[in-house]
Amino acid sequence: MTDPAGHLRAPQCLGRRSLLLGGGAALVLPRQAAARRGASTLGLADTTVRKELARDYAGTLRAVAAMGYGWFGFRLASYVANDPSEPTPQDKARMVRDAGMTMGVVRLGVRGADYDRQLDQAAAIGARIVALTTAPIFIASRTLGQTTRAALDAYIPQLAALGEKAKAAGLTLAYHNHWYDLMPIDGDRPLDLMASRIAPDLLSFEVDLAWAWYAGVAPLDLLAALGPRVVSMHLKDIDRNHGTAITDHAVTPGSGEMDYAALMPRIARLTRATGYVEVDNPEDGLAAARAAMACLRGR
Image (cartoon, rainbow, N blue to C red; front, side, top):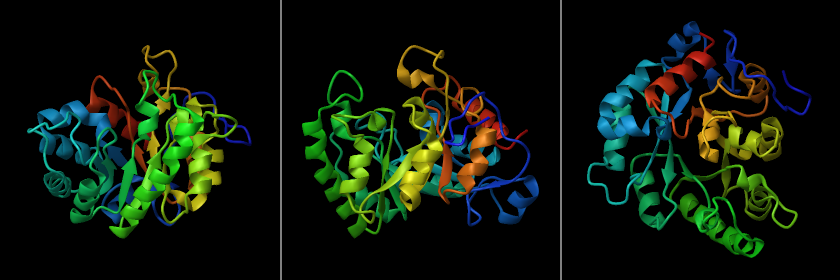
């Protein structure tokens, strides 16, 4: 159930009804509607199947497509620096198409990333949205997400400049939130400062619903506040008893605290953005992707 502000309670999967994200951008489609459209518009982020991709990139994509995913988002840079076995962005885009899916949001690197090169790569493969997973200032200290107001104030103009470069390349830059972007620093939440100080045509947002929830922010409130600047969403769940690290608390939709059955119809009235299943550290990525699809389709 949810309260009027969108705070969610008991874990629950979606019912079998069709839930649309406005304008036909469906997160969950009944089988008949999916057949008419040719594919589900639910996406999968490569993080979920990271281990499987390392073993067989093309085969994993075929398995993901067979589950009903219509979009696939991936990183432009390799998970391991200078990994010769990592397919090029061009090869990734080709394999996504060959598997029958549409290339979704592509991700920029964070540590030591050559943004000019990666923006060129994104434009060359026909991407529309490039996402920044986090700000470098949040991974500069020993404690993930810890930074200072001075560092934040200095970084925001750099983020705006990156948005300028993305726009010049014909791309939309989207910033991806974690819990720490929504924790106040000297009275202001970093995400609010980014949104207020950077023009909408230079910065959009990829809202991670579960990390917002983890920070104590109602996902619906965040979506409503950002409005049309939300161009993508990450869908996972939170189980604070799972694992020890904070990122271990990110679990498959339907297996944690969030009530997706109540959440999704209300999201449909707030945004047209595509939702991507993203589970940070699953033991079995394909099993997690399959369970998420089954949950979100109400099987």
